View 1 (cartoon, rainbow, N blue to C red):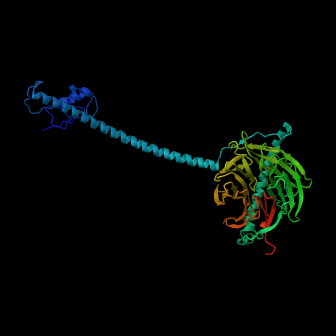
View 2 (cartoon, helix red, strand yellow; view 1 turned 135 degrees about the vertical axis):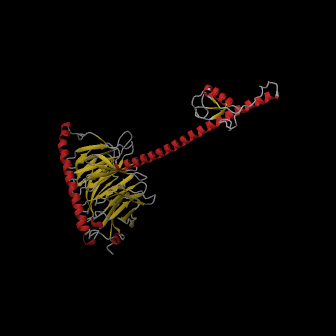
View 3 (cartoon, rainbow, N blue to C red; view 1 turned 45 degrees about the horizontal axis):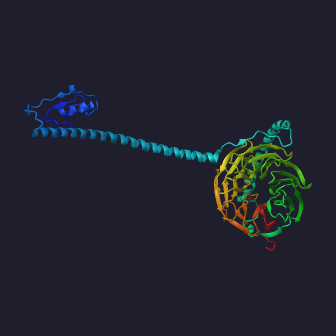
Length: 516
């Protein structure tokens, strides 16, 4: 019977058995290993020379120990070297196996860590996108401020007033929602019809031409009409604001100036006609002032000083009793939106936007129900606010430039926006996403956007004026009569005419040619 040494893989001369690993070794090799390591080569457990069990082989006559000067001595030295080499080789094989196991374990751990990191990064990205879209940072709401010139005691009275205001807003919103649903269900969809009977047909609107041009409304020394609005109840009344600091009320039917309203110290930025009262017009300017005008008296009913920077946007609430205003931000100043009482001229509350300094608001528009509103910003985003909670409820990122104008569809489902990127974007308020993007020429310089009252047409003004049909978003007509930037556009009743204004000092009326 022969044995094989577990270290040298050779037949041992003096075989011994390790009680730890139950393996056979050459005595001299295992003794050297134990002298160096003190452990069993196979199991790694502690082992001493005394524990080794010698295995008896048939007796063999061993030669006498060679002397150092003989050939046998040289052979003995070579034998020792070979033994050391075998022991080293064995140790290397063991270490290699251990290293391979450790490396394999490390690779599996690294792969698992990479997978976990990738999953976490994906979840973080999705969470950030959801946060930016659905639940942005809460707005910083300022404590209620007394109107300039009012005593602090009056601010205390505003508490009861604000509670009543909230109830009025809720009642008005509920009524408007009910009416809108009734109109949609009863009028628009009866007998399979999807549009009002008297609404101008697309083929007629596509043939609109200029019917009148009025260039004498504002001063020639400071040319440019910056904004406009049309009275909802009587579309013959049109109000414009200009670089000459004046607000002009014009009667389209008689082609006469009804009133020239003077009071702003700098150019007028926005105007709004009260939806039901022909005698009330609201304007805001670069002088940080909001004027509530009496058209008949040609003087302000109230002067609202809710901002310290230019008031870039205003919108009248559906109740007709309140006005929303926004301002641009400056260095070390936050942009703000404010809610004021039109009847008393009192500032009810004001909220700071947490946008970076200098990234102020550029425009504002109430939703038809009046409980939410949108603001456009210099930082390319559109923010939707809850009026009662005074917090942001949604963000619409996507434009590549500052937002210039917003318009809600009367059905309350869609929001249109234009910006410095010459893009028109349609947003679905139910799904909180971009429904359609219309890319215009890079030189278009969009300045205003407006849905007609039915929501079937959308007009955009800039380098020219363009009208699109809703749902299909086909371009119906391009009106190129303005010789300079068109800054405003509005539809008449049932889209029977389109009114525009521009930096060429002209108020232009477009409609169906009488010859046709």
